[in-house]
Amino acid sequence: MNTQGVPDNARPYTFSFACSDETNDIVPSDMIGIDIPITFRATQIRWGLRARGQSSQFVLSKNNVPFQTLNISNLDDNKGILPGTGFAQGDKLSVSCISAGTGNRGLKIYLVGYV
Image 1 (cartoon, rainbow, N blue to C red):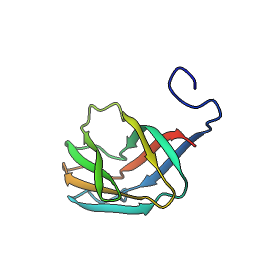
Image 2: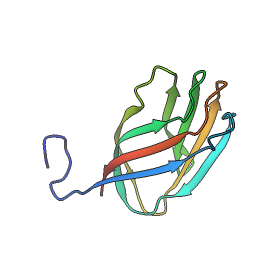
Image 3: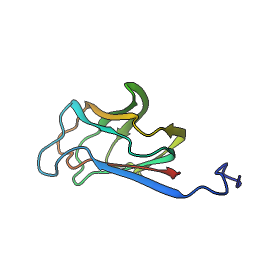
C-alpha cells in the first residue's frame, strides 16, 4: 500500500459517462442507469456541465442505494472525494436529478480510482 491507501499493484482507472444532452436544460428525473463493466474502486468523483445556470442537486446510487449527493453550483470546483466506493462488475449505477436550476446542460460524470 502507498501512503494514500492504494495497493501497490493497482492501476489507475476512470469510468466516465454522459447523463444528459448538451442542448436541453436538465430537469428533475431519473437520468441514467448503467451496468458497471469491471470491478474497481472509486476514490474521487468529478463532473462537468456544458452550460451552468442555477444550482442543481443530483444523487448517485449503486444497486438502488444512494451513495453520493452532488450539489452543483456555478462556483463548484468540479470534484469531490468518495470514501473508497467499491464497484463489482455488474453493479447498477444510476444518476437522478433531484432539483434542477435553469440553464444547466450536458452533465458528465467521471469516477476516478483504480482496478
